Image 1: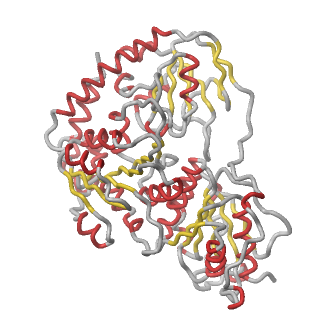
Image 2: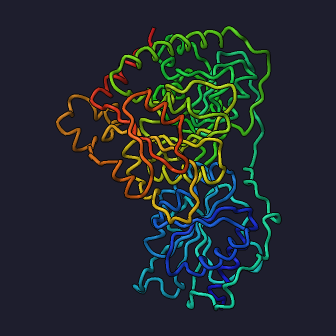
Image 3: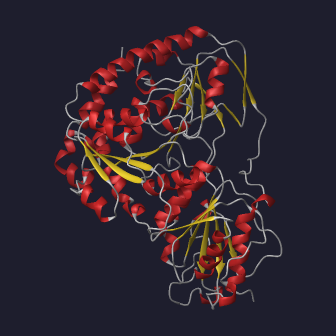
Length: 530
């Protein structure tokens, strides 16, 4: 029978062989064999080990590292409910196509179904979204190819769970990161699609759809790029495309080429589902690459034939400039620190080579409206596979640790911040990135004010059922975890705070009003008409 230490040693050397650089450990007893071996390998410089007290936080920290680096990252947990706490991050990784490896410690299989302490059936606990390998012995040969999506490795550890003292000294691993292919495995490709320039076409770039830039340039077409697409740059990108899709110009669209995973706006969803608009798709990554709208053709690559027709693009650019001026004028008239102004200042603070991690709900939608295109790409990213608020802080911290950008900013709402506040809890010896966390605090879930349930008909129950004001003192909360805190109430104060980072992790609380959110959004949408 393979000892726990030998099985753990094999697993750690296997992930090093795959090119893993970062491992996040949530402490536990059953996972102790892995903890000791990981400590040895970290001391030898074979990997970087991070520890976190919360398994959900640990998983999203590893997810952020894997998403921005393109290399697999590992999260390690003990058995029982600890494993279940990985589920949100594993689902996000599955739908976004992120190579996150969950190594879950387990009791021997003979204890399953017996009521033994902290023992449940955790093999395949994440369902068909995440493949699972269940091991009690060291395999005869290499187990894994470099993954391009999440995987669970469940290790059955028998006692003793600690190595002998002679095994605790640091030693070099038997494997080398150079021995494996450290780049994500390419998906099976199909024959490309050839597209003629002819029809009036726009290019829609959803999350992780950066190839849209080259497609738009080749066809001379307008580019409708979400902030996290990696395509909101260059001469073809539009800022106010969401408003323009409600204008007469949108009625002339005959064809859409879509890349990435578009999820942000209903105008884009309506365009992609329009029965008289042809949709050609570049195949998306993730658990379910099949599109939720009719697709005439789909392939991994698209080839454009014909000369670009400049008039079509010029008309969109002219309309975009005019709508952007209207938006900026409207936002400038809002009393207090408008949420849209927060988005604009955050976007402006990200330099070339910088990182911006964006939370779900209103922040990413406000950014979509206010973020101007740039001449060069910037790394703007988010957890958009399932677009949840889970683990946003942890993912942002993981991303900043993994790539050490020139400037790192996280931008999220107050509910999203509170949902992952354990991300700020760490031991003093754990590495700390330079990361400014901008919290747009309107004391509740104002995203619901913009949706159907925010209508006046439901006002009586809105605060209790949807807005859920919390009244949390963010300054006191930050003080409790020794994180510097700024509170800003004007656009000038926010710009000053962003221009003068404290170093390390800091929280910039931007206090914004919520009472008029529904009206503001309605009136901004109205600027698209005409």
